Image 1 (cartoon, rainbow over the protein chains, first blue to last red):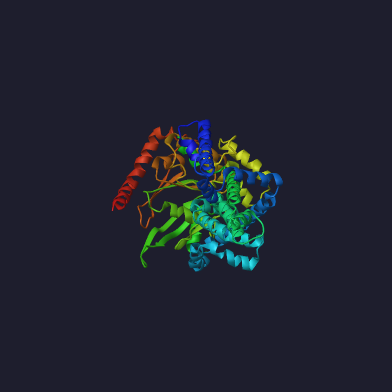
Image 2: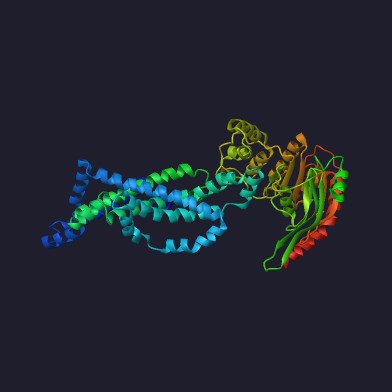
Length: 274
Length: 279
């Protein structure tokens, strides 16, 4: 979206109008096809069974927020996301640094890392439910397996790509091994972690929601699962809607944090804008 | 002490700031058993307070020699002596200015300059105060908060210079530090380097492929042969008056004479290096 606004010939307001117009068209078409009048009542009901009715979806969302029913579920999902992201990042950072700095260990671990990364890890959710129960922990575990590999590979890359000249310079300035780790490897690795922040936060969110969906007692994923069980398609779509807005919000926050933390990096957009 | 050590020690009134003693550096080649000898049997002395330049054709192992002096690279045979003592590990008395970008991109100018003091455990407030002084001395007051990518190439070199000099090293090792700069910026930087150097006469080993730069800066110029197995093939004392202006000194007749004499030695090696590069 950012790139579009940089390249297009539309003004900012025109662009915003276009965005809103698309949403409006989708709603109008959706409303028209699910309300008797434009199509016969039988067809309208059939379509509504599969796609829900926009006004009812809006009402469900409205009810959730006015009655406050959604807040504990959202809080749980957010909490799982944050925990999964934090634990996965710390773990990925630690293991990534360790393996990148000890070639022997990395040579030994390499096939297993590749295998675990290739494995579709969502399939682990039932196992985590058995191990950690239906509470927060099993969702965090799923999120961690997703976040860990993103962070791990980025850290590994970050350490490998430290400029040998910068490293030699720090050594000439008198840095000890520990100081090299703190002043060279860690900042270099974290910059790579931050550049993958969008993906890893997104993955933590996916881990939380999918975990909830596969078995839980709380969370937005649980709400969707329950509604689906009774064919309440309006609530399912309302849940998806809330999750989407929520994900956008997370992404927005991450962008702000990223800008703050990576001021030292030349932004590619600065040159692309020309 | 070996007989050679004694000889080296006796050569100056006191031990030389930096001396190479029959240094050979060989690297493993691509195929097993194959070896590439970058530097062969090189002896070289930098007296205390002397500005010595080493010139040679590209790819002749000049940087290898400097890395040995810095302690970043252990020679295959022979040794480097610092103040008469064999060097083991990183040369703590030396500052190193690299040819390519060596600043930490995630630190701003100020924090790059304080890095060395930080590694030595100097209190932050003290380090910051001294870094401000040094940035001002290299003409970068007001640029403390800029990150390397926000500075021009010349400015980054100045930050590197401040980063090195704030530690007050006795020996300066410089590896074609200004080769990436345009000619005007380069002459400005050379003059600034001479100013800073004449203030407290450190020992300098300056590597360059630019003969004019070498003559205008140095007390002595050493010419290296083309690689492989590089070794010194000539040494010239530069008896030009100081203080010097690198742009103006090039007009002096004596400069032209020296240039001709050294070029005479260097030329065949440059051609040899060029021929090897083409092959």
